Each structure stands twice: as C-alpha cells, then as structure tokens.
Amino acid sequence: MLLFGDAPVTAFGPLAVAAVRDRLFADGLARSTINGAVRRIRRAFRWAASRELVPAGVPEALANVDGLRAGRTPAWEAKPAVPVDDAVVEAMLGHLPEALADMFRVQRLTGMRPGEVCSLRACDLDRSRDFLAFRPGSHKTEHHGRQRAIFIGPKGQAVLLRYLARDAEASCVRPCDSDGTRPTKEYRAFADAKQSVRKETERLFDGYERDLLQSQPNHVEVLVEKNTVFDMAVRVTREFQLQTADSRRRSPSSEVKLTDAYSRPDQMQTAGPADC
Image (spheres, rainbow, N blue to C red):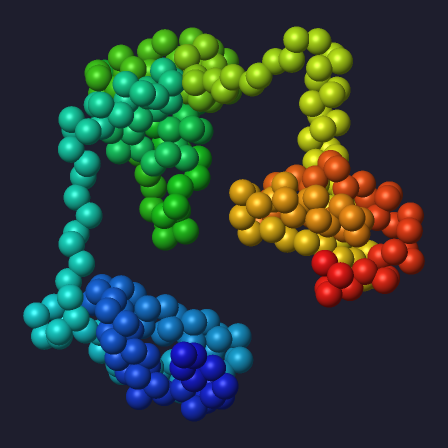
C-alpha cells in the first residue's frame, strides 16, 4: 500500500517519516536498511528545498526524526559484509580467463576499484621508487577534494610486469588479451548451404498457419488437451475443415489445410457444435 502518495509535500512532516519508518519495520527490513531509507527521504527534501520546490522548513523538521539505534529497537540487525575467504577466491581464479584473473589479483593486492584497474596505464605509474604509485585521473571521492594514490608492491608488480611493455597510453590489462583462453560457445554448423536454408525456412514458417488463422476476425479452432486423442480429433475436425491444435503448442496438423478451410465458407457456416 502506498503511503502519503497523494499528500502534499508541505504536509509531510516528522510524524509521516516515523510512519514510513514503522511501515518498513513491519515489512521485516533490517535496522540499517530502515535508517538508510529515512536518510534518503531527508536528502530528497533537502534537494527540493534547495530548488525552492518545498518550503525550507520542511527538511528542517524532518531532520528531527532520529534513526533506529542498535540495541534499542526490535528491528533485526543485518550481518556485516565480510571479505570472501582466500581459498574461495583462489578456486574462482582458476576458472577465469588469464587476463581477467590477473585483474582480480591486482585488485586484491592493491585495493584498486574495478574501474581503476581497467583504466590503469603505464604512463600513469610513478616508477621513481621501489614501489609503483598509481594516481587515477578521476575517482569517486574527488568531489570532496581528496587525492587518491595507490601503491603497488613487489607482488603486484610481478603480475603487471608483462602488461607494461605495451603502448604507454593504452590500458595495461584488457580482458580481450585472454581471447585465446576465454571460453567460447560452439555453434552447430550445417553440412551445406541447402541444409542451412531449409532449416532456417522451417524455423521462419513454424506456426505460420496457426498465426494466420488466429489473425482472422472470426476463426474456429479446436484445441485438444490430450495428445492421446489428438489424431482422433483431427479425423473428426477434418470433415468440417476446422483447424486443430493441442494445448502443448504442437504444430497444427498438416492434414487440415488452411486454404481448404477457407475455400468452402458455406460448409464452415453450416457446421455448428451440434454437427460436431
């Protein structure tokens, strides 16, 4: 059920936020998840006030709603995210293409983010010391005025060594470097062009008769629920030139031609349920 969906923003105050918080608790969400939702509500109203979409007093009032505190609420506590066990990571690396596995190794040894290891170039590395220093041109906290430096020790250098010989302006590690070891999908090949054309034509016209029949304004079709009586039903419906199909999406019977069914409309009209 939508809460406060039709209420004006000026009427959305601390009690409304508390009601939303209680509803999230009733839905069984964790304390941290509930507090995160409340913070997003506050930020949304602060942004709206900065654009003069809501009075400035609305977000100020919402700031008075406290978050749920650990140990003082019946809301359950979410388990903290913990690092994956090294044994699991090592087992996973054995199933990755070679270059992609090296990208994971560099991340584990240096703490790089995925985007940073993908953008790493030789020209971005400071090699004036025993360790390498990588300063990304852009990072997620730069809008806070922070600088980011990533230091690569001997183990990380050993992984990157064979990738540093390429163009200094090019990315050091690229997944396409593992094309030789990357898993490939095998496609079935046809013996000759004639077989390929025949199979593709059959696939194109599969179900075409039934689709054409059902596109008519008033069509009559017999749907058979049991495959065991399908052939028997075809023998009966053939006398009345009716299309027959089963519930398992079996292709329409080839014995009943669509052209024959519409070639004698007088017979179609005179054949009613009692005649069947």
